[in-house]
Amino acid sequence: MPELLAYLQDPELVARFQRRCGLFLVEAAHQGRGRTHAPAGTSDTPCGHRPRYEVRNWLLHVLFLLSAGMGHEIFYITCLPCIHWSLDPFLCRRLVNMWTVVMYVGQLMKDVLKLPRPPSPPVVKLEKRVDAEYGLPSTHAMAATAISFTLLLSASSRIQFQFEVGLLIAVTLSSLVCLSRLYTGMHSVLDVISGALISALLVFLTYPYWETFDRFQLTSRMSPIVGLSLPLFLGYAYPDIDHYSTTRGDTITILGAGAGCWVGYWANEQLGETFEPQGPLPAPLPALTAAVLARSAARCLVGASALLAIRQVVKTLSLRVLYSWYNVPKSDAGARRRREIEVPSKFTTYTAVGLVNSILVNRVFVLLGLL
Image 1 (cartoon, one colour):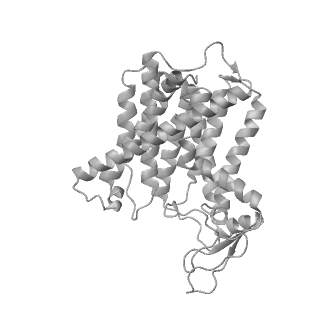
Image 2 (tube, helix red, strand yellow):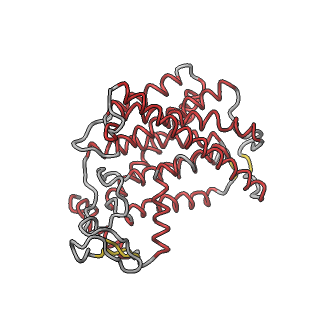
Image 3 (tube, rainbow, N blue to C red):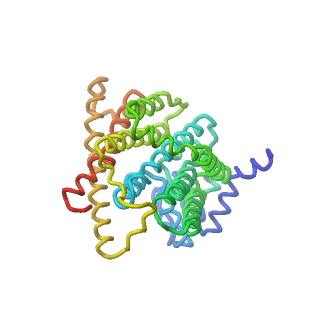
């Protein structure tokens, strides 16, 4: 077993996969001459920084970069809410709940286990933002597995579709995201396999309790208290590590969004306006006419704009208040990494995003005639 684990964590295994997909390291030449001209198909970076790379298969390159994007904030703040706005709020609620649990477990495991990411060389690293984070498990693999199979399991009671086709789509999407983490050089094979298996285990263990949790979340008087206090407690309890990374901040982002959606869905239930499909379930999928697609695109555009706007406003205001409270100069951009500023700022910002997504956006659609 130790030999197998060591093999799966070998960075050369990742580098071989990258080369098979047409991604090659190019040794930086002419050290000390500053910026060099890279050959066609390569990145052009200053010498002495990261090694350059050559792309020989642009189709796979674009495919894997797009797949990797399914694990970033821009995907979560646009595509997941679109399921609420254009398909079924029930499905979005299930996805957000499971996504929050899976991502918190994955982020926590990273900073507890502290296993490094593959080094470069031999691998090519295409992402810089999360390079300071630890590697195991891959939270991209966890999120993709959880989202794909939670949607598959939940949608079967809400929408009419062929289960085998849905299963094929779920496997394909989650596999693409998992492979993208190898292609981008951000995880070992062990990281990716562990992430997918842990996520699958969490879905399996929690699935029997989804209905029970739904009832508590939507109907209990304690629901909004638990929905806000538990994620906030978990955010403050998140462990420190010996260097700064984006892990804690990303975790607070996820907890805040989950808390906001939790309270928002409870509020909708109390107001008697859940915006869920009417009539017998499972309902047939709407015909994809030009009018339906245009209306759906308009909803996504308006909704995403609202979320991005509230994110920017609340982020700016919360940072100003916290900088003033802790007497921090506005010029000190690094202060936002401090726990006492990062946790409340991000939690407040993304709780607001979750509330707007679940409560306000659909009501804006009604005013605009988009529902």
